[in-house]
Image 1 (cartoon, protein in one colour):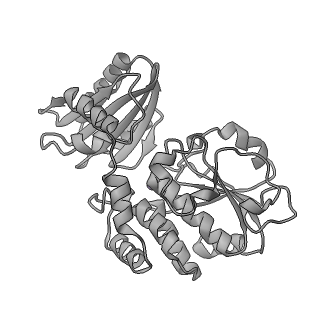
Image 2: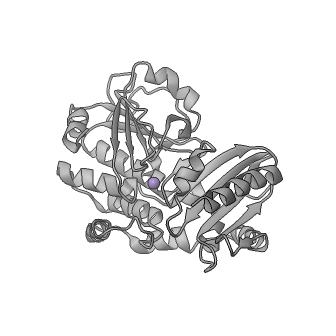
Length: 328
Ligand SMILES: [Mn+2]
């Protein structure tokens, strides 16, 4: 669908929207959610963002976070949800940054809602399964950049609050404008957002300069557990259960090693549930690699979730990785 098809869907007055995003949300997920929510509210719509287990410490500083609810609940147009309408249901569910329906947390609660309500899927993952009634999937750095382009083409003026959310979204998914997904258009979008009043100082402080001592202990452990295979140019680390809840991203440090083209971090998030983050610095396609384990993402950044003991999962994935590298 085109931006103007999408615009037509959102145009009728006073509609009720439910916005959702993916599990383990990042700042592209929450930043996109809150910018879309604030823009829809400005158009006179009623909006609720449903984020189960919202992490106040990580995202509580983003403008508009009062639009987030941890419960799906019913929608009766109460005043705290915006302008209020007499309807008691949603007109649309919008998912942002979620490449497939299983990526949406507690999605079993959404299934009855979706019997009567169409889902609009807005994303930038090229392996998106187009699970929406409407799908708008574009190959840009971030959903933040996708929304920036949409708002611009619709003539929706972005205020400083929305600009901060979009800037946080783009900044995170581009690794502070360092990854390959950063294009000239990405930087123009970032520049325009700063001109609109995006608080880049706040974004940089809150995302990159607010690690706790626990975060550092996680990094320390991840660096201590680092295994580097120089001849095959990969490296991995692992964090056994229970590793404390942390916003430290050890993968961002491990990838800095010169001898590594492919970096992996295995984190046991529950007993025998392993979350794997993968990054590629050169031509190896981690999205393609992850797909064989039911994972996905982008060519240079992807994720996998597997059940099994940490040792077994590491062995399975590393064996597969070595044969993939050797077959190139
Ligand atoms: Mn994203």
